[in-house]
Image (cartoon, rainbow, N blue to C red; front, side, top):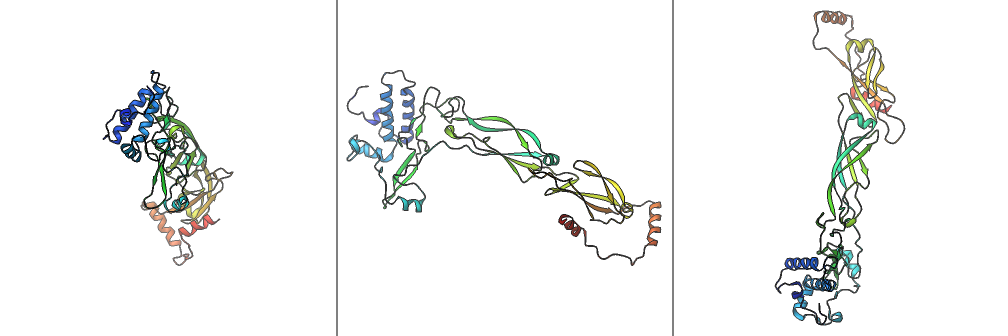
Length: 375
């Protein structure tokens, strides 16, 4: 490539003066791939590559392109006849602009580092017993991981991302607000605020820098968890773009109901059915608990809704010593069908009762439940 006067930017990119923005971008990417110094064997590849970048920097910017179409390479008042940023100086009204519009102002250049990856959520179904005693479960899910081929930078191995010609590597685009001496700053739409573009995208991830993969991990569920809780596993979310850190994985717990037990905080409630004879005479029974059967003495005269507390037979306290209790709530079951012998015995029993000897001080089933939880 010979030195001397600058070539026409449209000629450099091989496009016409009426080319649309998409056509300009396609021409730039095609030529950038062809003359990238890491790929091209031509001796003047680096000089051509710089010339291509310079042409794209001007023609991809609407304001710079309009000035170039009018004045060519000799911009009136431009630094050295070039196309520098006309709003590079600070603005005294930037603080006011931030307060009203929430954007950055001229002279306040933001630092754009690698972004953190997205968090993920996984729903894990547990049995009642697994939630009570804890469990280790292997789960499988899919996430975006750093591309092993390009190491996350999105460029084909052997090449590198280059400075964005549209924002000159700042990752920012600046526009003057109409009627007021203020400048808005937004992320560059060409490089998405990264400050770099990828002339030759990685074939493995197509320039994304990440690929979706299946992952297997073991989740340790502690004893005593409940269905309204979740477990955070740091660094098991998705990889951030351009080598950014991983997000977190949140495992939401879905505890299935038990056919016998009902959980209330760290206590377990069990409804115990008694026949009229057991309730009247009392009996020592085998009562189911989450640990197995336990003996429980039912005193004579037990009523429906009466409660008995079995200490330490409830749910373990989460990350603490000790356990809640099991509360046994009785329900006296009146038989709906009687054989002849049972009917005769009940009739004989009924004649022994005084019909006026009925207690009217029963506080009710729910009242006794409340008393049980107050103890």
